[in-house]
Picture 1: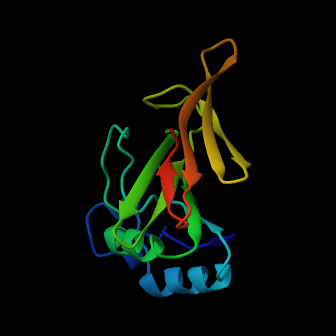
Picture 2: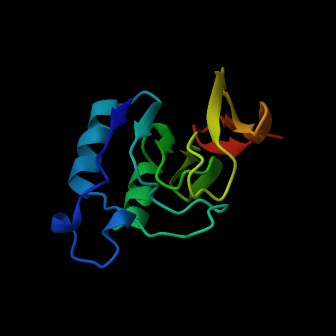
Length: 159
């Protein structure tokens, strides 16, 4: 597991919405090198690409390039937050794939969705992602997706 910094303040980014984040290819390469050759997990604050279910589609600077860098690496999961909504998106390229998971939040202030936290179940080659959403009385489990590692090492949708 390795982390890469994607949050830089206004002084570091020359664009109007600095809250969208930025990824440094050099820092990402360092994190990928730390992971090595074994299947790994990368953790960062901003998703490289906006989740399909996000109400706002923000753009992390150099996120598309970072996504393409991760795909051929041994990284299987990229964990991030920022959007405060639980999601599971498979990013596939001709040269590899990875699963991007964004975390929900337990905060109730100005959020589109219900407060939630995510559960990731790794069992052999299978990955199950479950969001536990609070409906005001209790947490209810909602499956976000079931994925597996194929024989070529690529993450695919199970089924």
